[in-house]
Image (cartoon, rainbow, N blue to C red):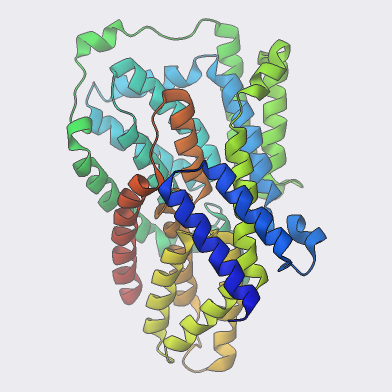
Length: 425
């Protein structure tokens, strides 16, 4: 390791240690780390840093959907959906937990995970209000389920799109090859979370209490407009691959139309309620992780990983799966996957006989990169956004270390099942 690699690694580790201690606000921590790296001179082309390492599509997607959800929340639509789900569960909170997590996983398989969380978590908080329940088990289950569900399809998570493009996989290839593993992981993880929080999810709400809950729709016209807007957003995201724009512009268009039709007199007030600290947090984190990519730390680790497998296909699969899972818990899985793709592609050149069929290795990379996001509170965008909404609108906070306890348990279960699955794939 040269000095630049050591410096980038040191800043990355110090940043995560500071995040774990929770003594300084996380946004300030990553901004200090990013600023230090910029002033250190490790970036060869400082003017290109924002273009190369900051994912503005993700940042503007967050911004647009935060505005969209903030505006729609005032119509009562999220409370309405939550109450309907509660009625369907007949007051059984365990049943409701699985309804909401299954809905999250299914939605995340076709829509962006962040979008899914921005829609589902407000519904969950509305139900928690109505039943005087602790929303933390539900929100954690939804965060984990969004990352698990996103693993199942080509469009569910950005790493899958990247891998699918490199390997030539179709939408159905993902469903057929990863669908069974994702289903087993979803059931195992949520049964575990339900057991861990059994005191909370065993609660039952009496039918008499359900009947007392009033429908939170004060303006039927705005409510109907909200339904149309949600249908429009879902449709646009589902067919985004056929449109000449990124997902961020769909979110911004949706936010603009929502404000125009539902809240045009309070634009500044709506914008003041956006989680700006979360958006800025992502900005700084992208640069901190970019330091590892710029200096070649990620590529060096990837090549050492493959060399360690010593020509065994199954060993390569297991190493890439588990190393990717652990790495993606701490670094953005998009640059990580971008680094691993050429490494996997080079295997056929290194040993064309042993690595004649790379498909199993691609599936291992996909499982590890996508599921690893559940390991820490900053492992995936959905985690950061879900916890930010929980804190802002419900006053409940899950610290880095507390999430780490649940996240690593979930990650261990996910990687164990995935490892057994790829061995017999």
